Structure formats: C-alpha cells, structure tokens
Amino acid sequence: MPEVALVSLVIPVYNETGVIETTHAKIVAALDGLPYDFLIYYVDDGSTDGTDAALAAIAAQDGRVRVLTLSRNFGHQAALTAGLDQAEGDIVISLDGDGQHPALMIPEMIDLVRQGYDIVQAQRIEEGDGLSFKKITSGAFYTLINKISGTRIQPGAADFRALSRQALDALKSMPEYHRFLRGMIAWMGFKSVVLPYHEEKRMAGRSKYSLAKMVRLASDAVFSFSLMPLYIGLSAGGVFIFLAAAQIIYVLFLWLTGQYDKIVPGWSSLMAVMLIASGIVMILLGFIGVYVGYIFQEVKHRPKYILKK
Ligand code: UDP
Ligand code: MG
View 1 (cartoon, rainbow, N blue to C red):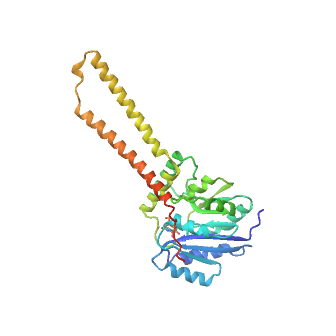
View 2: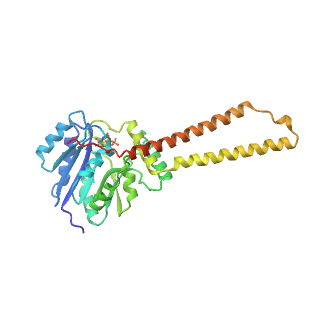
C-alpha cells in the first residue's frame, strides 16, 4: 500500500452561508479518528453573502482549514481547479460545500486509493421514479456526450472524487481554459473505480448552478470533448450535394426526353431548399464560430481564475 500521510480536501463554495458550517461539522465528524493528517481547502468563489466571514470563523477554530479566495465568481470548475492547484498531500478529495456529497464516504475513498486506485469517482444514484428537470437534462447530456466524444464519461459522475498525487499532477498538467473536469479526468486514464452514492438533500440555500451555468458546462463539455458538431456540417453538406446532383439528373432527364412542360420552376420548392440550405450553413458557421472562440480563449493563455488571498 502506498504510504499516505497527508490527505487534502478541496471544497468550492459560492454563497453558502448557513450551509458551510454544517458541511464543515459533517466533514470533521467523518475525519474523526482517521490516522492521517488533513488539510481542508475551502475555495471562496467570489461569494457576496458573508461566506468569507463564515469561512474565516471556521479557519480560526480549525487549524487544518485553509481558505482560498478568488477575485470574483469564476464558476465551480475554475474554483475547483484553484483548490486542486494549491492542494498538498498524497491524496486529494474534492466535494461540494452544500453537504450533498456524503463526507462519510471519505474513509472508504482513502482506502481505495491506498489499495492502488488513482481515481475514486463517486457516482450519483438517481433515486425514486419521479422525473425532475435536473434528472432529464443530466440524463440527456450524458447520453449525448458519450455518443459524440471518444472519452467515456460515467453518467451521474459528480465532482466528488479522490485523486492520488500522481493523478492530480497529471490533471494539473492540462492547462486548458474551458474545463469539464469530469471529462478531463476520464480522459487521463489511470486505474479508477466508481463508488455509487445517494445524494443528500441540499441543507439550505438553493443550487448555485443556474440554467446558464449548466448550459455553459454542457457546451464546454461538448465543444472541448468532441469535433462531432463540425462533422455534422460535413455530412449535411454531403447530403445536400447528393440531392442537388439528383435534381440535376432529374431535370436533364426530363429535358432530354422532351418533357419540357414538366420543367416548371417551382417557387415554393426553390424557397424551401434555399431556406434549409442557408439554415444549415448558418448553423455550421455557428459551430465553427464556437470552436474559433474556444481557440481564441485558449491561445490567450488567460489564467483560469485569479487568487486574491
Ligand atoms: N459553486 C461554486 N461556484 C459557482 C457555483 C457553484 O463554487 O459558480 C459551488 C457551490 O457552492 C457548491 C458546489 O459548487 O459547493 C456545487 O454547486 P451546487 O450545489 O449549487 O450545484 P448542484 O448540486 O445543484 O449541481
Ligand atoms: Mg449541490
């Protein structure tokens, strides 16, 4: 078993007053009696609701706590990256600050890394039969991303996982700006194991993943893990060339066989073809635009986050 002395936890938080104290208490309880040293990194992702004061109070009481403060709200994935970049230790575990990721699984995660797994990935088990907006969108998203990307991404994979030092260093060597950590970690390989868990209710506050943030995460995943949207263009173009060729042959045939009366220029069909074709061209230009935008952001080499403190 690899020698493990220090384990770090990385917890991004955005406006979680009233939640963060309970989360910390749960974590403290889960770590109690474990034979390792711990560092607990809270990454304050530009909170505006007094989370900073709450974190300072937690840090004042618990010597294992480190608080990283970003200069503004950079988003969950960037905040997580900031924490992972700073984290010391032989094993680093990331989890949410809203108590939805059961801290009681931490000892098991550590044991699995000690048994030789570099990545211990927690996977949310969907409960009940009821359909919720999140369930449907998340299900559709994972189906899509696994169809179009070469990297298999576990459905329901959460940003709740343990990484060995080696896996974390590999992740840190990936400097991309648009980060979909679940995909990047799946892409890395390494010996990994999936640990199912039942998500707990959010203790207070509401989800900080607005619809806009969910859409951004999904597009980061699609555009940074797949070239498929560009290929859609190629195949749609092919279909249209084929249709055009078929039409030319048809008209030529009518012309050669003297059926001139049938060659009536149909305004509606012409319009339809034009509209469809230009629609497809627009969509494809849009895809190319997104990729060019991503390339632009990557080549600027902007930092993924700015650490204030
Ligand atoms: N979070 C963050 N920055 C953001 C949005 C969320 O650091 O811009 C944190 C949030 O405080 C929580 C974790 O990321 O600890 C997961 O967010 P949330 O619970 O809102 O997402 P959900 O569980 O609804 O997917
Ligand atoms: Mg949550």
